[in-house]
Length: 444
Ligand SMILES: [Zn+2]
Image (tube, rainbow, N blue to C red):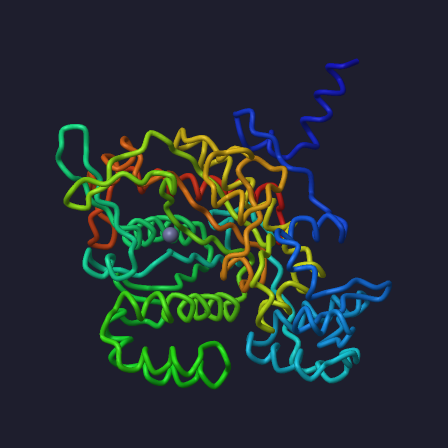
């Protein structure tokens, strides 16, 4: 009897069809509004920007407006479908305009008849191109093309090895070569793949950071000043500064992430992978030359939308994305994708997933555990602004004593860029996760 039940269960549990291992599939997730709120709100301060009533979500521009009940906008439960379609069809800036005009009125569906774009469904097809019709966006994190630029964006690991030599890698190159491997493999199977930056050393603006500063900084600062994202004082400082690290921190980092989200949303992918390599934030030992001593810790983690903290409901964009996350199935679909990708990465790399009560202090402050191994809700610019299922991967610790040696050992090449076997293994982990997810869903 029990054997029969087990046999039956193995037929209806998709993961057991396509993996020889013990990894279980998550159930097709469906979460209640309250469960989504629990994952989406990390800090109580967030609760002073919205209220729920029986008809929908009221949004407030500030806690003082919340206290006196002066609503900025109201998004009704029975218009959430339309709200999601509008979001899918229009640019973020247009949605912000519509949201601003909306107030407490309902969207009029007739007004959107011609502009709504319906998604092209994908169906796994049993041919030599099983992924034909699948659209995947890949976002390789950061932008440096060399060690100097990596210093501008403070994404370089220089690690003292046990034999006192120093190994060096920079994250933008690791993520970019990883994305190239994934893109190659997916395209061979028929998928259409977007890279948010197409060349090594390019930003999401299709040029290097240095060229962007030369060509575009002035206009960008003036536009953002007009839109209220920066103050006059900061704008003045940026316009006279030649300090690339300051320009990156005070402006470019946020500004470029927005561009990545715009590119991805315009591409309308079936899902998005955001690719990063992690470091141990508790590892704070450096030698006299500023090189870092290695850590013994090593974990993978993945992020999905949610976990807003204090200060993250300040802008309209943040509030309307908050409502979208609650009124769509973005969290559920992202958890499914991230679960598959995270478990396969962990298996392929032999690196454990970050545990719920791990020792990284920032994780306790910014992340909510989803209940699925290694998958956390976190309000990063890209988990918030990208429309559609996503997996934000933070894979292994670059400053781990073994990892740094593997990553710095560049014995292979992709598109003329030297890289390591370890990077290819990371790419294979992502690829396995994607295939397991697509096999599980069959249709997207
Ligand atoms: Zn990163």
